[in-house]
Amino acid sequence: KHIKTNKYIKWVIGKYVEADNANGNGQYWTLKDLQKKHSTVDHTPMNMGHRPHDIVGTVVASEMIYPDRSDMNPYVETVAAFWKWYRPEELKALEEAYKTGNSWQSMEAVSDTVTCVGPEGCGKTFDYAGPNSDTYCACLQDRRGHKQLDNPHFLGSGLIIPPDRPGWSNADINSIARRTTDEQKDRKITR
Image (cartoon, rainbow, N blue to C red; front, side, top):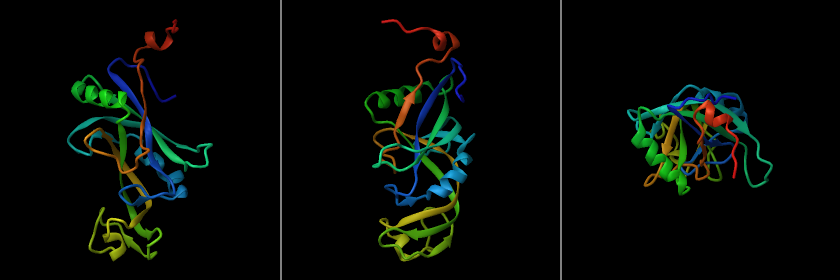
């Protein structure tokens, strides 16, 4: 319902962030926080590789997804508009990576506080001071520490293609829309 046909936009749909499981960067969100705050990513910038001056589009909407599979946690999915008119080289690189199953998105977020969680966590909570801070406990200063981002505010999305890798290995780009005009959208496919 969020996708509007426009021949100058490519629509990108993908997994954004997972609930109740630390990603490869040790970041962790509770399902309750994601249910309340996932929509803070709506209308934020989408960039290439977390480069803030390499904006290629905007996140239009987000939704909580509750998989039927027991081996998957709930996660946030986004739909984003890629500005293909302005960024054709970046779109080509993304589409090539997508064809080989090597395209992802990565979240960008801050939070009010950070809590040390996980198997080795001490349970202490600190004012958010960035991804790493001397004000955090020794557990969180260790790269293996799990940082629960409490009351998150999502600031945008980074599109990730090789050689870079995402923090959450399942943050796949699920779809890059092929149909971009009303004529293509309404055309019947015949084989």
